[in-house]
Length: 370
Image 1 (cartoon, rainbow, N blue to C red):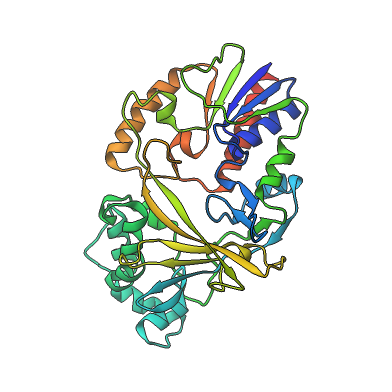
Image 2: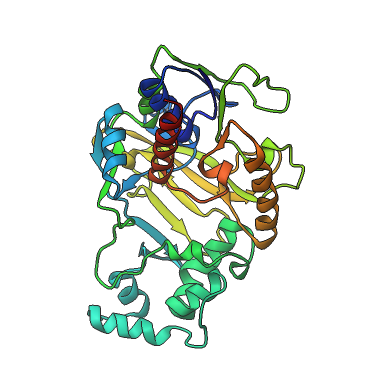
């Protein structure tokens, strides 16, 4: 049996690794980029030797033990707690919003119970079930905290008014009434010691897996010699945009290099609209077990995804969902095709969600074909 896998990110790599080790098959993994790993690709910066997350920061975090045990087969992880800071009007605050953020912002010394009652008093009681991002924020934390930490940042990140975005985007961000400034809630958090690319190299290192880079999957690609296709690219691109383009935001980076330590933290967000970039990430802080005299940092900007851009975040506006439904109907009619991953399913997914979905898809496929 021959399997074609489009995309060498986590979806494609996990499926390839699992299938060749559970079935009598061969897998061809193709990717239009010149490297494996998708947006999780890491590489040493030539000038500073710092391990850089090429497409922006990736901190592995999960509460799924199956996923955690699986990914550790391919490399050692060091524990890493992501402590994000945010700059607003010349002050540095910690994110997500926690007791320190609340006390600092309002100039108070509230305890957890007092802070909870205080924030509840700020919330907009007129809002029932929030219909969008803005209503979710106004009901959750009130106008002042929303305007300071979410409004401007969200407009820069998504390129539209927060009132146009679904409420589900904000539901991923916690508010804490203690001094816990850990950005994630998941109990397992870490970064691979040798970078993410090393994980992919080991996953794809098998005599029955062939990797073909700089290879674009389009209507001219011959799939006749394959028994099944796993596709993890953009869903609209698969159908040559016949129902229109799904909207995504993409990001681009401005590289800077200096001596020593630039900002003292891996990630600092900038919430005001007057600052054109959304955040600055300094990559030496993602590997605190390494020592580097120089540092490299990146200012991150967000924009609409155009032709030739790499899509990052599905916007999932009302018009997008109508287009998505049309493509999903087309996809369901295709035999011997599986659409998987963030781009092919047009969903926001963290790394551990992608890996879990790929493990489940590979298991189901092997069960049916074994």
